[in-house]
Length: 199
Image (cartoon, rainbow, N blue to C red):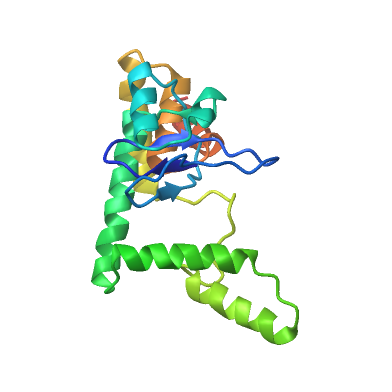
């Protein structure tokens, strides 16, 4: 997942399923902002300067030492900022503050861990889950979203120019996957359509 509580680009944090981890080793200011991207993410090695910066911000140095933390590309860092700013802007239009968002996030975590013991509690949990969800009956995680025909055409045109400039196809697919938050396999299918049309 992508995380940040500092005024700089986020990092990729690998969360192991076999053990709990401590993200913040020391008390640090700043609201924890995290997001799980749907598309593939390129993890870049941390520089020594970046390592020192993260530890100074309060990140658990053990996570860095064990190879759980990676840097992100400029493309993904910019997309993270745009998504965060859009969320804050929409929340303000709905009359919500950053503190309100933090309370919603904490409540969602507690709700997810709550195990109902009777019918009334099950119905209550379902009602709150519906309230907290962005859209009732939304498509489940893991299924790729779709983009418009115009966006697909723009993607193919950009890919052609990038290949002409010497960029290899694998890097193009990785970059588009981050930009559009889509799986790489879906990006490849879109670009394959361009090649078929050229034939």
